[in-house]
Every structure is written in structure tokens, then in C-alpha cells.
Length: 212
Image (cartoon, rainbow, N blue to C red; front, top):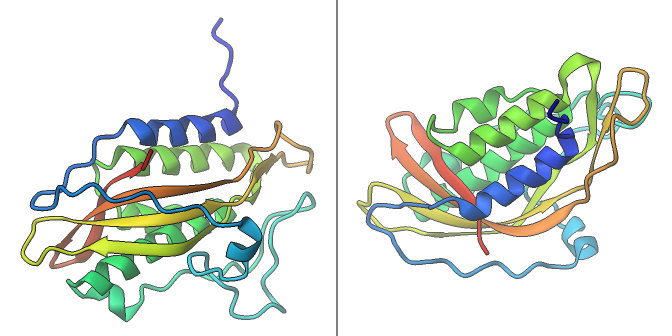
């Protein structure tokens, strides 16, 4: 019998998968430079990529006793609706806000809507979150921050690229009785590259991967 791959191991497997993805961007083939990791403490002081609670009196992050409560739903900023450099950057931040929301709630609806069907890395992340939340389980941590986002916008190009520094907080998965499902997964501070396309419906993430 093949042993079951732990869900936390799948988080690492998804990250490893990103290094093997071939990112393609029509009209924009310049390889972006990897973002320099920053100290997690200083980065946490400027949370630009994770959804911020509108009221600390009602928002409650998840812990071993229960799921997160009143998690603010990310709202697409006006800047992310424009086919511009600023639009690409605002959309990339919003995409990771939506992913952070999915980690906290198990709801991948927004990520589904703004990700292309052929984005392998996007699908892998969504599927992993769904598994982690199955059978009454929930995730503690796993929120995302994007202190640095930089797009190389080429007017008229079919697709555009953005380089994003992504700080992923440690993840622990708890069973319905509050006990740990398995050993927690460590956090990470990596540079990612997103390929986006713009159409009548706005921006869509069509490819995503880690930068070596």
C-alpha cells in the first residue's frame, strides 16, 4: 500500500513544483531578478499583501480552539482594473490577498475566479487548501504578505509579468477536536513570478512560479 502523503508535505511539494514551471509571456521575455528576502519581523510591520481586518473587535484569527472568524473579504482595488503597470501590480497583490483569505477560511472562490484554467501552480495551491480544510479540519496561520511587487509592463503585449516577494506564515492543520492533524509546516520568504493577461473581464493570473 502506498503511504499517504501528509498535507503539510503537499505544501512543500507545491512550492517545489513552482521552481520547475516554465513561465511564458508573449512580448516580455526578460527574466526578472529575484526579490531579496527581508527580515520577517520588519516585513510583518508592513503587511501590504494580507487582508487587514476592518475591525479588530470582530476579526479573530484561527487558533487551536477554532477557525478564524469574521475574516475580511478582499476587495479588488480600482487600480487593479486598469491595463497599466500599476494595474498589474495591484492585481498581483489582490491575488495573494485572495489566496491568504483562502488559507484562513478554506474558501477558494475568489482565487478560482481570477486564475486561468491552465495555471498549474494556482490549481495546486487551491487543491491543497481544499484538502487541508476537508473533514472538519482547519488551518491556523498560512497568511500571506507581499511587501514588494514590481511589474515589467510592455504596452500592447498579450501578457504581462510581475515579480512578487511573498512571505508565507507557518501553517498548522487542526482536526475537528482541535488536535494537530500533523506536524506544522514552516513559513517561507520567497520571490514569485506571475504572468497575467487582461481582457474585457479584467486581469487573470495565467501562470505562477517561484524564482530560483
